[in-house]
Length: 359
Ligand code: ATP
Ligand code: MG
Image 1 (cartoon, rainbow, N blue to C red):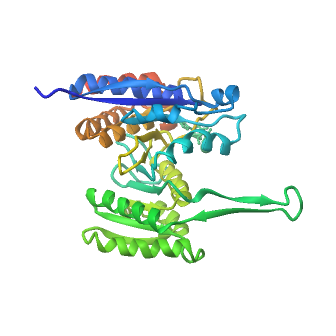
Image 2: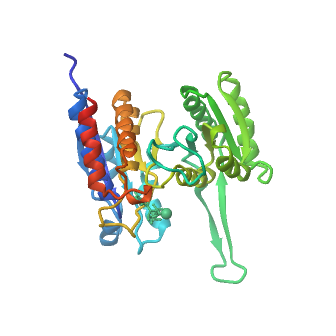
Image 3: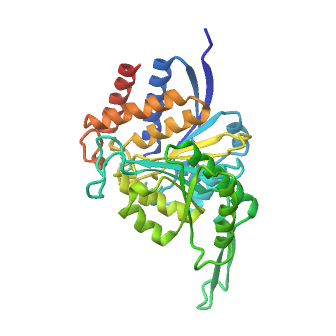
């Protein structure tokens, strides 16, 4: 008998509903590994959060990144607290992992799950099934710029976007590879090259160059503003979408809302070179308005767990997990944000039961 593979997973639940959804995700992953018998998982929890930051002035302890490096993947909850400015928490924890670990590709699948409803009239499962690939290492979020004459009426702040040929090429190439593996083999390159005539024009040029190496992938390009209309009016016409850090950030929130809820979709922060562990998280934030009520939708974390398994090479288990989640939604077991009346635990239990039934 081939022995089951073992994966070491670092869990960082962090803030708000993060601990609740990660707890649900770990429960489902344990059920899946028990049922599949093809892999085992060791979880190590790190209590890095805005609470730790408020006590110690740090989100990540000195040897923290070294510790994380020993793992095969990182499962991340959400960071952000009402009493810590967002740019401090984001740069303190999430980006403090993404950047040194070179997780330059941010992959965000969205689709209408069976049994769930889209706010788009008449759209149903199958009409919207996209993957957004987001540049995750530079661009508008490079952190470059500064402020002069602080507080004066003539104060000036600059926020410089950095686009390098190296980073744009590797990301677009990766996005084409994602598109190539999907059924429709179609990619839309999104920029704003009419108004931004340097970095965005270089994006268009690089996309055209990369496209030549993927003759089997259909490629079209869109300006980001027109893209928002196309996502709403012709969701069936899109498949893989590649865009800059800022543009893809905005488009993926729109995508999640069109699919029915911000509570369902996952994000993978990938280091495609596999020199560092990649990090997987639901796209939603810490959602303090529903924290502690036990009603957070865990589906985003289940789908996240599936994408983590896929990255680790456990394709079959990943597909099975997502299938079980869709069956449970199809049976009407959903949280309030999807129009149901189940709580986090009921959805989690239902998915665990469905996993047992499917294997
Ligand atoms: P952050 O500042 O970390 O982004 P946030 O409070 O802005 O967090 P978001 O995740 O952006 O929260 O979500 C916006 C709203 O969507 C939340 O206030 C919450 O009501 C709802 N929401 C988010 N995630 C979930 C979920 N998993 N289940 C149910 N509702 C959710
Ligand atoms: Mg938010």
